[in-house]
Image 1 (cartoon, rainbow over the protein chains, first blue to last red):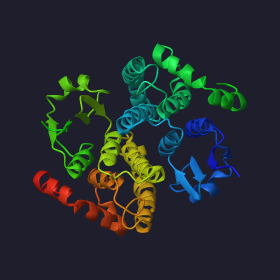
Image 2 (image 1 turned 120 degrees about the horizontal axis):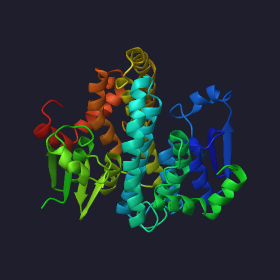
Image 3 (image 1 turned 135 degrees about the vertical axis):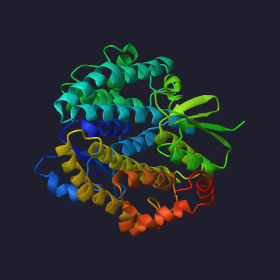
Length: 202
Length: 202
């Protein structure tokens, strides 16, 4: 029996960073992908009405970021001490700020407000954050924190595809250090192998 | 010189859980509170254009959740192992989901959509999450995770004031276990002392 069972939809989304970290860990895992039809019957069985969930050692946990941090620790990719862990956590929280700004603009229902929000997003918010992150990668030997690979890098690159899709262009193109980080993570043997067998388009 | 310097606005907000955790830690800290006038000149000096920031050991870090997790570790309130840390992180991520649902409804600009979103929030989303959290506290000896106090409890109670203000009623009133948790955290000697000298209204 697989050590871990991931339950998510049949798409990358918030399941993908978990799949990548599980691939890096190398433990066998079940990648359960729910159909739209299955979801209503599964939803009430989850800890907080959402997927992804991860089942292991007789328990079911939720929340993709918390799960990724845990798997990052197991894979020795969560920093060598509390300060390094903090640096990773800070950058991951910034990724969530970026996501939230994105959602705020994309799901705005007032067309006039939406146009304004999207303009602010594309002209100010996203360039600001990506420049800040790019500087960090430049100073950190090609990684987001601590001069070495962490689960934060895996998390960032796994969600970049989603962000790219949302904004309609590749934000790393203008930021050479982030582009390099993207390539570094996608070239990790376990992630490369995972993508080759699961994500033909990456 | 104080070991830590917290920079935030002169309000509870995202600074308060940090202030509470610093009070628990017991290290002397500077509680710098920016005026509206100061903020524009401080903003560009922060790591990601936002406060709170925490300065210590020659570095400046941002992101309140990452900072609270770090201080929680220092205060031995971050779980005894990776699994316990995961349980705390999961609940903290749920608190962010609640916050996000709240913001999504409150800052909706279309009045018609806003009414609908607020109704869904008050009738479905908030009761759902608070019931789930209440169940956890019941099963965990009066705390959100692992049967003992963690930085997640401090974080939750510190932000509850904000949530209460936002929704206009006290969500813990209907949930006896959460109410008990609220009282437990507010009765911690260091937090009690902090509130007595800083937050007359708590």
